Image (cartoon, rainbow, N blue to C red; front, top):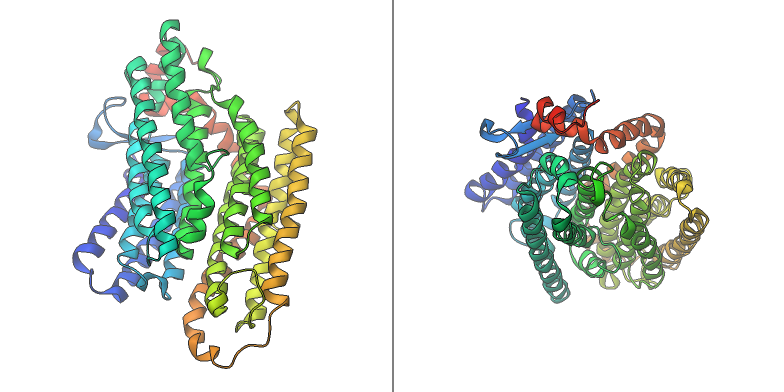
Amino acid sequence: MNNWIIVPALLPAFTAAFLLLTLRHRPEAQRVVSLIATVLGLMVAIGLAVEAADGVPQAYRLGNWPAPFGIVLVLDRLSATMLVLTGVLGVCVALYAAADWDRRGQHFHPLLQFQLLGINGAFLTGDVFNLFVFFEVMLIASYGLMLHGGGRERLKAGFQYVAINLIASTLFLIGVGLIYSVTGTLNMADLAMKIPDVALADQGLLKAGALLLFLVFATKAALVPLHWWLPATYASTSPPAAAIFMIMTKVGAYAILRVYGLVFGAEAGAMAFVAAPFVLPAALATLLLGTIGLLGSRDLKSLSAFAIVASMGTLLIALGLFDVTGVSSALYYVVHSTLAGAALFLLAGLIADGRGVTEDRLVPAPAMHGEILIGGLYLLAAIAMVGLPPLSGFLGKVMILEATRVSSIWPWIWALILGTSLVMTLGFVRAGSTLFWSSRPPEETRAEDLPASTQAVPVIAVIILLALTGAWTAAAGPAMMWMEATARQSLDRDAYVEAVLGRHNVRTAGLEE
C-alpha cells in the first residue's frame, strides 16, 4: 500500500490547521508557509503521477479496513493528472495572492489550504459518500474565499452561490440515499459490480438516484440550465479565488466521468450510461449560451466567466461521448482550459487594479503602467481561451472536432464549435481594443499608486500559467498519449474493481476473461 496517496489530503489539512492555530496574526509567515506547502503538494502530486504511469490503479485503505467497508482512496492516471493540475494552480494562486490580495480579508491562506484539501480528496476518493464529504469541505472553504475582501456585490453573489450549493448538497444526499437503498453500498468499485444485478423492480429508484447525482455534478460543472450561478460568482469574487475556482468546475466534469463512465459505464446493464443522453445536448447549449454571454459582457471579469461557461460546454461535448477518443480529447482540453482560464482571471485582476476607478469595465480609461506587457499577456490569454493557433486551445478543439465524428449530428457540432469560436474571437477583440487601444495617456499620479514591486509577483504568476499553456502545446504529442492511456484506464471497470476489491471479486462477478 502506497502511503503517499493520502498526502495530498493530509498536507493541506495540517497546513490549514497550523496557519490558524499558530500563525493567525502573522500574515507574512502565513504566506511563506502556505506557498511552501502548495509547492510540496505539487511535488507529491508529480511523484504520484510518476507512480500512476505504470497503468495499474492503486488503492489506499484507511486503517487497513477492507473495501467496501472502509474508506478507500484510489490513485490512477486520472486522479494523478487532476492532482498535478490542482497543485500547479494552487502554487500560482498562492503566489499571486501573496502580493496583496491575501490582506484584503481574513484567513485567505487557511481557506486556500482547506479548498485544496477538498479538491484533492474529491479526486482521490473511491466511494460516493466521501465524494459528498470532500465536496462539502471544498464548498465551505469556497464560501469563505468567495466573500474574501467583502463588498456589496460580492455579498449578493455569495448569497446566491451558497443557496444553490445548499440545494445541490441536499440533492446529493437524497441521490446517495436512493442508490444505497437499492445496492447497499457506496463504494464505486462495489457499485460497479452490483448495479448490473439490481432487480427490475428497483431500477426506477436506482435511476432516480443516478440522475439526481447527475443534476448535482452538472451544477458544479455549470451545464445549462444549471450554469447561471457561475458568471455572477466568478465575476464578483477576487481574482485569486476565481482562479482556484477554475478547478472546481473540473471537479464536476471529473465526477461525471468517474460515476457515469465507470460506475454506470458500459457494463452496467440497463443502467449503462444512464446520464449520457443528457450530456451532449446540455453541453451544446452551454457552449452557445456561454458565447452569447461573453459577447454581451460589459467588464472583463464577466467576459472571463462566460468564457469559462463556454469552455465547459466544449469539453463536455467530448466527455459526453464516453469513449476513449472523446474522453482523451476532453482531458487534454481540461488542462488547457484550467490554465488559460486561471491566467485570464488573474490578468483581469491586474487590469482592474491598473485602471483605477474604471476597473475592468469595457470603457476607455487612462493607460495603465506596463500596458505593453499586460496587453501582450491579454493577447496570449485571449488566443488560448478562444482556441486560435498556435496554442493548446486550438489543438484541443481540433481533437474534440475529430472525436465527435462518431456522432450522428457531427456537422451541427462542428458548426457550433467553429461558429462560437468566431464569436468569442470578436468578443475578446472588442474587449482588448477597448482596454488597450482606446486608452488615453497615463496619469502621472498613478505611478505612486501602483509601485512596480507590488505588481511584479502577480505578473509572474500569470506568466507561469501562460508559459505552461505554451508548454502544453509543445508537448501535445506525449500529452495526448498520456491522455489516451488515462481515458482507456478511466473507462476500464475491471482494473478499477481489481485494485479496490481484489482479483477474487472480479472473478466472482464473472468480469474477467
